[in-house]
Length: 437
Image 1 (tube, one colour):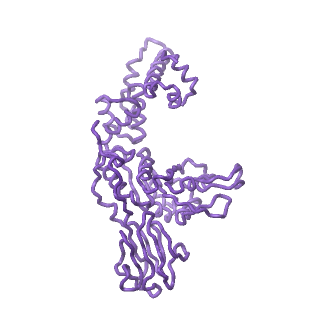
Image 2 (spheres, rainbow, N blue to C red):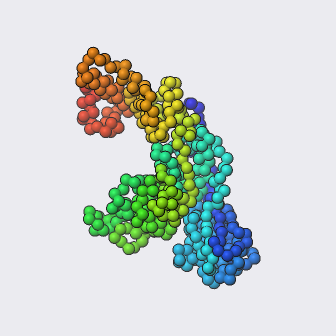
Image 3 (cartoon, rainbow, N blue to C red):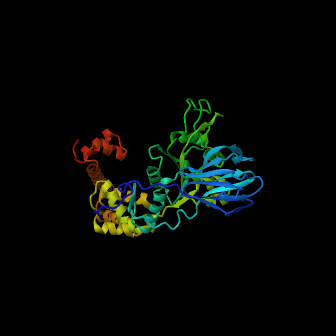
């Protein structure tokens, strides 16, 4: 497992091209029925020389020009008689995101990601991508899609069970994108105070509500010219969803208590462990917002579907925790588990092993684990309960302190931070177990 594995950061920057887009009329007829945008400029109009010929009397001969760009599609009206419109406003030149609609004359056009652009990509040859690890077929397929997304700033929706690494994927998308030099801001919509969701996302002015003693920008402003991860997007209150949709459509935000809108360019990545399409069907999530967020939808595989990666991940987590090797029997037990908590549960199991030398029980099964067996072997029923409990706790404490200090290279301040204990109290514990100050 020590041999070098190819990673996206070691192979250099690939050529970055935007995702192809498809333009199709939602009414009337056209030749062809839809137009694929890749590189170059495309003219839409009623004239025979147009790339997309629209048969409608309200459409000029050369009505508008479309150009594929990383942000989506740049629309340039060519002096048409009846105008080009976006969100009801007549435009001259404007860059719009994939998943949007424009109107030329009275004909509405859908501008969508090309359905086949991310389908049937050959598996990546990488076994690591930014901070993501995986040599399994599912992860190599995911890496191939992530590589293809590097030239696009399209909105991405990440779906997957808790603990599958959605934030790591979001950070990888940002790190390898055209806005990598900008900030990466993550907001967990499920942990926000319902009364303060708008303020957290869009900011507020002084006096906008009780406790707003100072003006403050929200997450959108903090992520300007970078990426914003909206984690657990399914928890976003319904009354805030249209405000988010407007921010995405117009690239503007208005702070709570302020009518003035501020221009903010942000690449949005949303994530959820829920089935967002089901929430739409149940009326708990706006359909128009769903389609705006799910321009590109990625399903992250649970750990049980990528068992071939467990040993690789376990060794990686162990090294991060200061453990150079793992016994073969431990690796075999880790590989055999289902991991309902996915990567998060695996890492916590490794933390416990590095700290006390035994694995914690598997969450899903009631069969005896190494931890249960180890505790049972130390139970002397000739001794009182309190005395036996004290001995087990002392044993745990000694092992924990020893492994933690090994992990931090003897740095007690760092060890105290990791343990969540005050520095002075941690020092007392160290002296108590005989490690010295």
